[in-house]
Length: 268
DNA sequence: AAGATTTGACCGTA
DNA sequence: TACGGTCAAATCTT
Image (cartoon, rainbow, N blue to C red):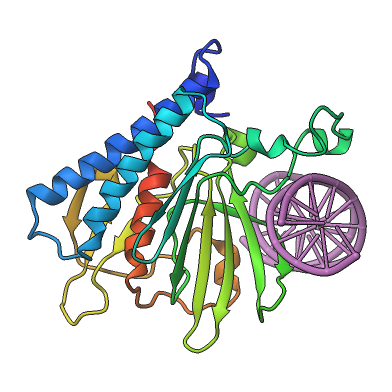
């Protein structure tokens, strides 16, 4: 792994994971603190703070699970307003249960096992438009899903091989009119190649002149005027004539959580 | 030419 | 055995 390559090799992987969780918790705590410091600077979903608190709690639990060497199948589910977060201590080790246990993995699949990774961290959001999360994604597959009218697209982080970033997402159109897209993020980004500071429009539906954006690069909340479109990084999605920059809804809250999660592993 | 996308095949899971 | 996630060769784009 790119970032983790800088860790001492002797450091147990569990401790690295625990460290990752703590870093994420630290970042969320900072955000919460700033929200509490300037409560009127930003208007947002009142459940947002609760969501952050729950995530922080979940991270502590995860850390304890990791350090306590609990069974890898344990995972936590955190219900929030429009998002489902689930955590586990390890989304990979637990996959090797069942018939392959103790068996020799076929050579072809030994390099990149693609068993379903349902126990890893996931986060879903439903949006009326496709949103750019600031990360570079590479499409690696597309599939028709039963009982749905639209195909599901599979994306992995562009830096999967460069930096070992295992982040992935699935995008599926779930409704035509009005268009709705479900984006499911899986695993955290460990790459450092954010194309730019991810930004979140928090208040685009009301009639105010200005919108409020999160700017995670500054570790704070910054009120800014919304300008321009912001879908530069997902070339594939641009090509598919999806509706461009439009209104975001309450899912912005969950999207913010995604960004918090994806941003947190920038070790220096 | 290099990088990105498409798409059929493969394979693990339920 | 059907379904869904991933691979990888072919194709396309820049």
